Amino acid sequence: MSLLVDCVKFIETYRGRDKIIRLCSYAAMLVGGDNTSPISEKARVIGRELSACRVILRLFDDLPMLAYNLQYGLGSKEKNPCLRVCELGSNLVNQLYYPIEHIAWCADKQLLTIKSGSFWLAGLILWAISLTLQAVKCLLTIARLKRSANRLKKQRYLDGQDQYYENSEQREELWLQLHGVQADIFSQYLLLLQSMADLLNAINWLPKGWLWGGRFGAAKSGLFGLASSLIMLFRHWYSRS
Image (cartoon, rainbow, N blue to C red; front, side, top):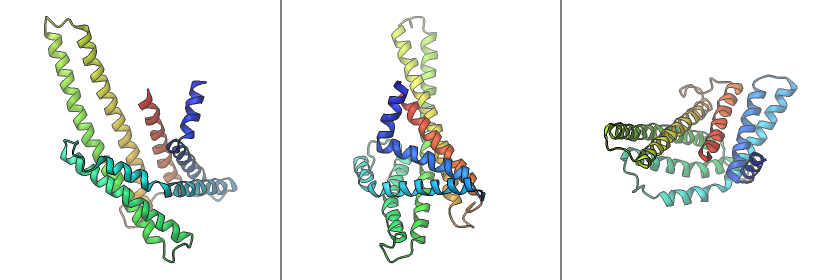
């Protein structure tokens, strides 16, 4: 019963509902694939409508993104300069993505007398850049966390060699710190896999000639997106445990 209550509360939130819609849209894309059967066509319709729903919902994401970026500022609290540069670049790219997507959407709906193609392309490029920066951030964070884990392991070993090391509370505290760092490393690996799965799709949807652009069918794109969405949901529940 508690799991059902948690699921309902999750779906009631904007971010939670967006994740579920994302999962369903990619699942429909996977089922639809490139087949011509009636079931496949219906699945593609569902996938397109759910994807369009997410585009409309993102019309209201500019202000939350701006609030986050203003709160982060210039990242003066981040000691690692490489992480700071990646985070600032990611924030800038994400902030630019929304108005560009809005313009493309308005052009598709003939609210603006311009062609939408170049704006959708610009949005895809920004998304790919954002995912690449996210992957780099994950790798840098994993390296930093592994150094912290090694220090804690070394400290536990040295303390264990000390004949006066009989403080069980201190041992427990070190173990909890090490367990927390290892959990963070696992979470970063999940985020890295999620970002790479999305990056596969982002590049694939670029025009042919851009790396592997246009080489994957709808079924493969749906598979990558579904994997990314499932990892995203798992990360949410994992962080709560």
